[in-house]
Image (cartoon, rainbow, N blue to C red; front, side):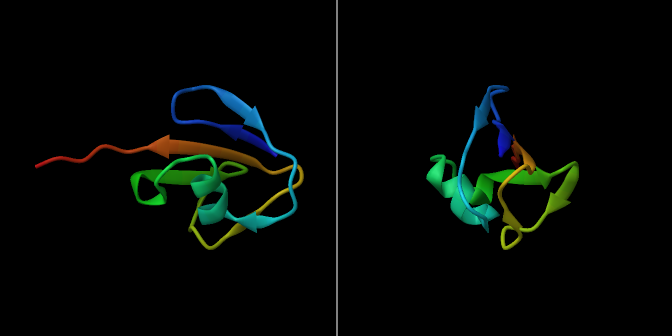
Length: 64
């Protein structure tokens, strides 16, 4: 699985399918601070990913 990180770097993870939320947490990222696209489509945290999937993790900033 190829992962584009919020800082622009890329990582390759070899693991079986897992929920997006678990993958993000394993990478040390708070799932409440990011949006994840799987194979070009924004997906919810309970979606699974693995194998040849491509994830793009985008950190969003909000303020008041």
